[in-house]
Image 1 (cartoon, rainbow over the protein chains, first blue to last red):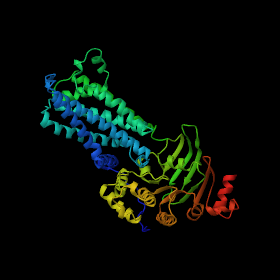
Image 2: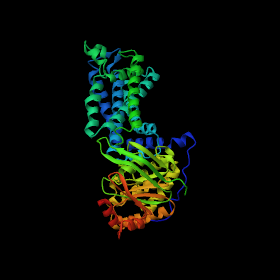
Image 3: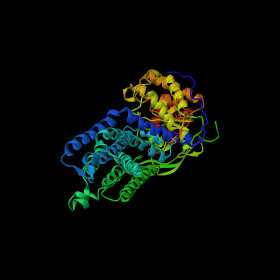
Image 4: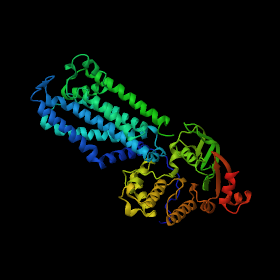
Length: 272
Length: 242
């Protein structure tokens, strides 16, 4: 080890430009994205393969028996829901596991001790899940297009639906990562809540075709509204008015964002 | 050097959610440029104090200032560097990335962070392991990387919580030499250690704490005189038994 002078103390300089003030956020977001890319076989390739198999197996095998749903070929009908399901699960699981690991190994302390603002830490930790979900969504769309020829009816609604869905589930992942005491806690929400609600949220069928009371019960499922918004963006059809679908998803996203912001502001569960 | 103290604690109190009172109205001032030792048995409140200063716990009451600024302000946090007792390195990053990303968290431009990371890897003999992830490093290398990370952003106040815990004799000597050199260059050092003979040799001022309270604070020579002791270890035993 050298004892050369390497740490001549310098006065801290106050950042002036927006970019300089947000270097911490950019760095933390970059770290989260790097983690996703380093583990790409697990974080991106595996969910893409699993969801693409759904499109292939369900789409090709059932499209002979179920000709049309809401006027669309069944292969096309299931694509929006499957992409939505893969993206929200990735956004949630990425952030819950990354935040829990950072707490568990205590390297989160390096971030908490830094000059970053609470909202920057919150946003930086959320970005990995967002990027991972977008990579999965883009890959699935590229794979599904030549097979299903799924249209994009309203790109603005599609972008809004995806943005709100990723905000909702990225923030939920951060919240659960903060509350979780074991890996099981983080996995429990995914396996017992998000996956079943995704399957029951009209991914594979139109909820309007369900008999009462199951059709009405489906409306209590928050993922149902997200699937409807994304489906409208792709196909121009949904079981509820698109404004209602986007509005309810936006309200849920606002709740989870406020929840995670409160956790970072108060330090509860993050700091003893 | 400035006339402002590097660290100022006023009536600092921390009661954990379970009811444990870890710090009880703690007052402390560390002048700029001092090599300061904080000694006490396990559970005395040393790590709680350090965690409070570094924004890692919720303080119950009291004030903390770093070079005259409230500790929660970004400008105050930018002036502090922390090497924790536990090795808490990011398992997904290699040695160089650990340093570069840490520099980013503290607002360093990337080219500057890369340059500084390479300097730190040279100083701490980590250059050959630049591309190795933290879990694959030996215990001594991880400890060196922790120290390099704490110094990456050139802090004026460096807080070292048991920096030589679990390292072999040779590395301990090297680390102490480096920390001494750092202090000679003007950096304020706040050190906790169980190696009392080294604290006696290195520290200009020593505080003894027990049960979350300050029980003595002075230079090593004055502590020896006031406790009529031959070594800091004797002082420690007498102070803790009192």
